[in-house]
Amino acid sequence: MPVPDVFELARNGERRALGRLLTLVERGGVNGDKVAEISHPIAGSSHVVGLTGAPGAGKSTITGRLAAAAGLASESGVGVVAIDPSSPITGGAILGDRIRMDEVIDREGTFVRSMATRGSSGGLALAVPGAIRVLDAVGYDPVIIETVGVGQVEVDIAGTADTTIVVVTPGWGDAVQANKAGLLEVADIFVVNKAERPGASDARRDLELMLDLGAHPDPNKPTWRAPILMTTATDGSGIDELWDQVVAHRSWLTETGELLGRRQNRDRFEMLGRVDELLGGLGRKRAESEQGLALLADVQSRKLSPTAAAAELLADLLES
Image (cartoon, rainbow, N blue to C red; front, side):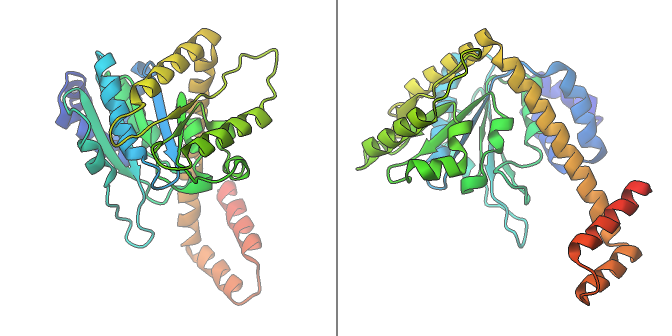
């Protein structure tokens, strides 16, 4: 079936057609590009909420609970994309986040899609911007993204989401670690999950201290101080308050004009990512050519450094 026909079925509520579109986005190629061409002009209105945090923080359960709360307030349905890590050896992924979400999400009105990182860093699969665009274009609002728990490099979500939620747990570490991870810069909302456990109040205190130390507001720019919420995702405690803060942040973004800037940054983030992907593919192909293999032989025999070999390949690629 042609891509435009599949897209029309998805817009009319056909879930299998939507799943097909997301599969095409993940596979890329001509059909993936066609999906982007069709969906981009009519997307751009859904609020994108990103959740990030260390492994084991309870992101999947929070995502499920948050989607359920959002579903009660949304007339258009909630889209969820859960990113799972891929094996560096086989490329496969367990995609277990969806299993945990199924326990708390009412499937009617909510569409959940799991994706594997396929080696991309920063906790996001390369196909995520395209998946967001498709869910947006067919009418889901909000769209919630749960990223891989990969520690200190997991800040790419800030370039993809309108509202970024950072989840921590008791014993998560001190403010120095948070600053190293870049959490201070990316968080719009902090969540201390597993709040019933000892040390939860200490985690909240550390976050408050971190925010106080990092507060240098520009008087000429609107500022948002990230609230710190306490949740117990297993029983849903604090989730309604979390959703209220997401709604409040969306209103703040709209009223201050920051929302437009974030969405323009999302387009820039995706475009640059695609440029990197295309150049990387061309570079790898050139590296496997006769010229590339000859340069590799020189590197392995210590006649040429890897840096010099890469520069020569790139120069030849640009010239051609």
